[in-house]
Amino acid sequence: MGNVTSNVAARFAFFPPDPPTYDVIKEEDGRLVLQGVTADKNMDVHVLDTKGGNKIVATFWKQPVARLTILYSHGNAADLGQMHELFIELRAHLRVNIMSYDYSGYEASTGKPTEFNTYYDIEAVYNCLKKEYGVKQEDLIVYGQSVGSGPTLHLASRLKKLSGVVLHSAILSGLRVLYPVKMTFWFDIFKNIDKIWHVNCPVLVIHGTDDDIFDWSHGKRLWELAKEKFDPLWVEGGGHCNLETFPEYIRHVRKFVQAMEKISITKPAKQITPAPNIAESEGCKCLRLKAKRAASKKEL
Image (cartoon, rainbow, N blue to C red; front, side):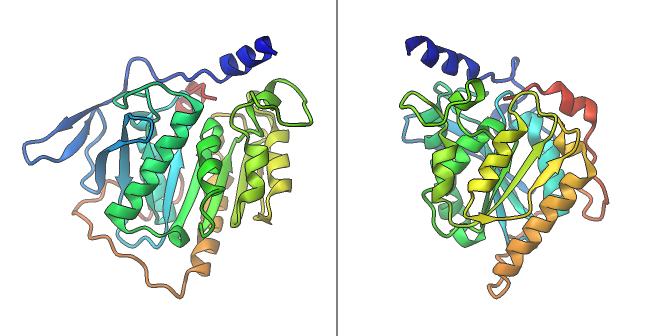
């Protein structure tokens, strides 16, 4: 049993990008910025305290007409510096605010990356959304990519009024990636298969049929277990790190966001005053993501 535990832990070892892709600096006016990331006057940087005793970096990408906010938990080998181009594109195409963060032990975030630290991390980010931006559960979509599905379902299983959940290349659990077990053991990690039962909002599952890291069967089973299923997106020929490069990806996520907006259409949209010169093109018709960049991010 000890060997099994070690194998599970080894399979899900965290891999922060090395060298780091950014640094956090304070400007003369006291504002925090990410050095190494293209400046964006509509992006706020936060350093948050977690219950685990760590300080994590989070970014809030403001969209002036957004009704909904996405809380995005990225994959294992990515960081905020690598993700900023995607966030700019999603903000433009989906017309949502986006909050994301780096796990404990990633880049400028202190501590060590562990399963439970990721849970403390996402809780701190959610609290920031509530206190700093007045975001309500009903206006929040939580989005988990790959290993980010773990903290995403941790939070979603505890919040009963969320707008929606997106599971992108997600896992059933750590042990189930290695072995076809039929029950959950105490030493398993990221027990998403058990937590999905407690999610009380629409769930969109996105998975590539050729995913060689987390088999397509993981996404399929999570969708089957969801109480409130949204039409899944099975990307034919899609792998683990390149789904954003397929045209059906943005179309389907937009469809989901629009459906969630209709649910809250009777509520006035929360206006966040924008700074001038948003670094994006709101009218563009396709994601400007390069397959080469996506394929190069070997993340869990």
